[in-house]
Amino acid sequence: MKSYLKVFLYGLVVWAVPAIVSFSIYSIRETERPLFESVMPLALTLITVFMANIYFKHVEINFVREGIYLGLIWFVLSVIIDQLLFSMGPMKMSVMEYIKDIGITYLIIPAITAGTGWAEDVRFKKFIKWIPPAN
Image (tube, rainbow, N blue to C red; front, side, top):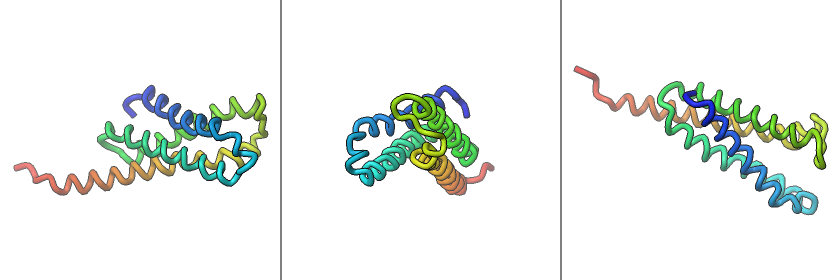
């Protein structure tokens, strides 16, 4: 990880986009809960894939390790921000309610970033095979 600030800022985006989506469609949470529960993981998946691809453009080695670390950092960051919002205020939830309703969904993040790291590693190894040996 070359830039922890970049990792943190990208992680904020990964948390913020689904949060904005959820606030925007919150009214359907009560009336059409299955639709809400389908849209939210989709929003998280799309922004995580997008941000992971931006991040990996600047990674040159240790792709799998980077993906695992990146995903864990973004996961922890999202849970911490959520806990600040959901442990108090109008949407107060117990930790167990939070884990069942929202927290498990965030495991999408490290799954995507580790998978992206693995895919980059495979691509890199194929690329290296095409480089002619030095004389």
